[in-house]
Length: 111
Image 1 (cartoon, rainbow, N blue to C red):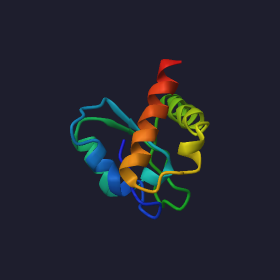
Image 2: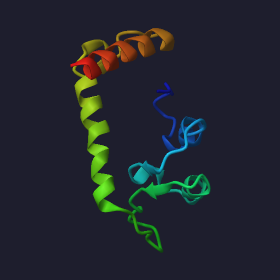
Image 3: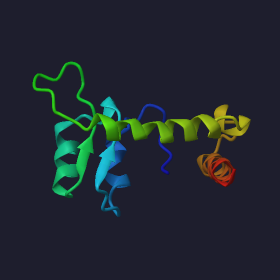
Image 4: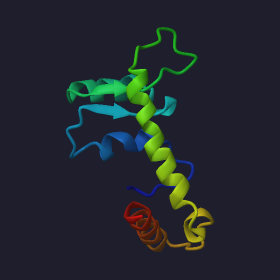
């Protein structure tokens, strides 16, 4: 997990999050459909499972069956946001907020 400002784009952090991993596939939403990021994923030998943006002139193919696995992450964050400190961001310091996100994540994963 990496904490960023609200105005930061997701795709700007994606390459850093993949730095130490050798995945078989990278699943992301349309926000990750950038030529540079897709090329980085393919250069690592992974399959990009990212649906193309609607304004893309030449839509790429992607594995729709594998993309359905993305719902696991969405359900995880839905459960983590049940913790008020995470959902409303009571903590103003980034380190404290991230610590509560970790506590919520651990609690969700232990259930």
